[in-house]
Amino acid sequence: MTQLNINKVKFLEKQLKKLEPTFAKGGKLEKLHYVYDALATFAFTPATTTSRGAHIRDGVDLKRTMFIVVLALIPALIFGMFNTGHWHFVAESGNWNLPYWDNVLDKFIYGAIKVLPMIVVSYGVGLGVEFIFCNIKGHPIHEGFLVSGMLIPLVMPVEVPLWMVAVATAFAVLIGKEVFGGTGMNIVNIALTARAFLFFAYPTKMSGDTVWMGGQEADGFSGATFLGDAQSLLSDSPAVNGVDGIMAKYSFMDSFMGMIPGSIGETSALACLIGAVLLIATGVGSLRIMLSFVIGGLAFGALFNAIGVNDYMNVPAYMHLVVGGFAFGAVFMATDPVTAAQTAHGKIWYGFFGGGIAILIRVLNPAYPEGVMLSILFMNIMAPLIDHYVIQANINRRLKRLKVA
Amino acid sequence: MSEVAEKVKAPAEPLFSKKNRKLVSDPLSDNNPITIQVLGICSALAITVQVEQAVVMSAAVFFVLALGNVVISLLRNLIPGRIRIIVQLVVVASLVIIVNQVLMAFLPDVSAKLSVFVGLIITNCIIMGRFEAFAMGNKPWPSFMDAVGNATGYAIILIIVAVVRELLGSGSLYGIPILGSPIPVEGYPNGTGLFDMGYMNNNLMVLPPMALIVVGIIIWIQRSRNKNLIESH
Image (cartoon, rainbow over all chains, first blue to last red; front, side, top):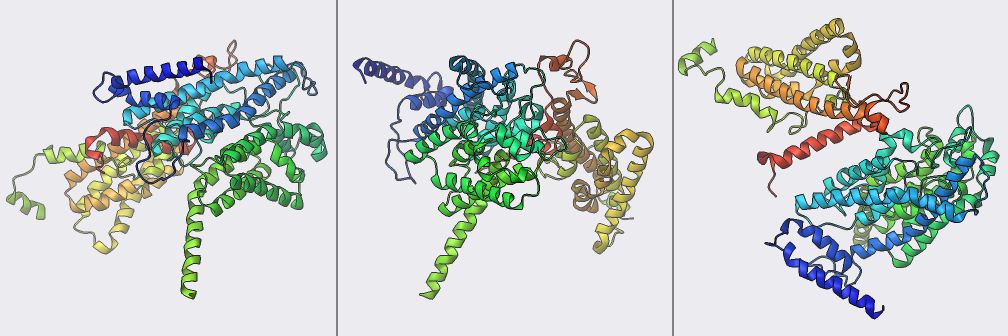
């Protein structure tokens, strides 16, 4: 860091110190103490230490943990913006095979114009609700929303109106989190609560053929996703010609790279993989959950391949991993430390069934093209039960050992 | 006979004495059957999609509960303890059948919408609960007041939930469009009113889970504002 920057940091610290008495007990703006506290600890590691319970001495607190997750989301976000721009131009020209790597800057700028307002709205509404709520209830503002605020826009289709993002965010923060006692107490994932809310409240804006591409679509052009087309295999008038048709339209490599339409951040399995590496290397995300989630998906996919009574069941198992929100869900949603299973064995069961049920819903339930959201929410609710049985099994095992000896 | 004997002992209580007034006012807030006792939730979730249904349902419950409470109270010394639930069921069932027949005759549309839920008033916990807990041990007049209080407390919550759900779920109140119409007309491809500006009906509001959340929010607000209900930790 250069001398200039140190001076700047020192200046910020001084200003914060100077303001502190204003917000302290008895100060003029006492009511806004927690807002001040949240902003000050965002800039500087707080001087307070854990009073009891945890005994880890580490410079990494919740804010810095959250920051790593946000950092891990950046590849998915950048790629998402670019991909959004690309499909917008595809929809406008009506040419599905538009060269992908042409006009890179135009596509990226268009995508950024579409995506950035959603991020601003998500953060603005979410933090606003949280600040107001914490001030009324008089408890410190936690950092959990730093990640949720980034996740929410990334799991939405690009055409969702901003006011819907705002309503869903407010609903998720209030009903998903604050009623249970704030950050760390929620039962289900906040970002998925927001998505589920929109999914059931405004279905026409969350699924179908018209929501995945920004802007006006050319005549006769249908902006379906892999999952939408795959679902149509079950209907009387499939949009593609069997499994071969769908595999020709969306190649494995394109899907892996993310060059397919879908929700903003979820299309690229590669970007999610980069994020996963960062999360695992820093110990923030759980490798057990990610791995068992993928294995669960593969296992159920293979099972359906073996049954194979209709076209959708014959979609290769490995394709399921790279299309839709599977990779994104496995890396960023299922690993949410608050809502996932806590025990080491529990995490494996949690991940396995999370991935498996996602494929189950995709293939068997014609009403829900994307099963990942519902399966993770379902497993969030099941997580405490899994933990209970894992712990109980451990107790029983040890009791047995005790009797033998 | 016993009533006459009691009247000799104590001077007659005024009809709207403080105690009787409390029988009505208590269930409105501090001891609300839905939000505090959490009874009758099933119907509160099922028939609050539209205000009209909620109003008719509230009226039906009011009729059944008020008349039933009085009847049970009159019979309370004649009912053998071991078969009292059966007797209570017979009373409530006959009253519900009357309500159902009247609705079918005079309000066939609403009757069709409410479908089985009129019949299910028989199993509404509020009614059996008041019979068992109050009417079996009190005189007809206080029983009537108790029924008025509980039925009104039920109606208030039902109508609040229905207003929220109909306004946000269908954009109307009592069938009258408030927020405009989502049906496209000439010149307005997205519908009229707010819908023209991109507003959309919230489909989740029409589904029962949202009624549960709305009732939960009412309980939350009530418990955090009413000092009598704040639990000490």
